[in-house]
Length: 177
Image (tube, rainbow, N blue to C red; front, side, top):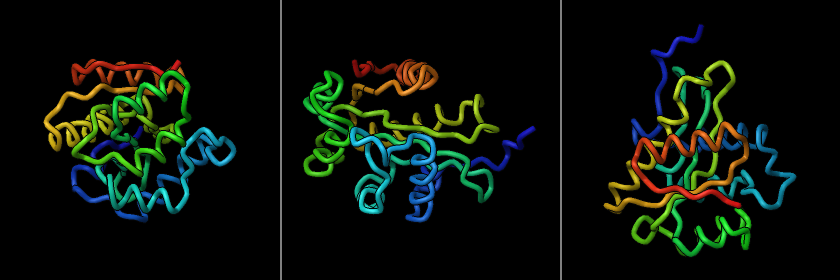
């Protein structure tokens, strides 16, 4: 049985360390194998540093005491980028490159539910759902809007999670076709 008393989120402290972000990227790479898929966002040190500097609230690192047990990652985007992505006109990686050039906390209208990973022994406890919700609420406060959520269903569990997030926050959501 897993002790849940030590679970914390980086958004609770308002601090995402570069080291935690690097370790989360390594977890993501191990699970999603982005290095071998040019359509996915690579967990390169350049991307990790950009995220850490520009959108640190978008990565929510979960720890059990000092051990990283998972993360969630969202990306603020425009409606145009969302529509191009969900229709298959651009890849996830292309969308992220456009976000890096032109999207910030003042001009986003949508939020991409990019990825989540939780170590197997901590799954099915609502940790990823809570991580996503905490990050989305921070972005909603920054902009005072009700964004459209969108996602790429990597697994059936991920698709159900995205629907649960939208339901919990009472937001519209769209899925990549």
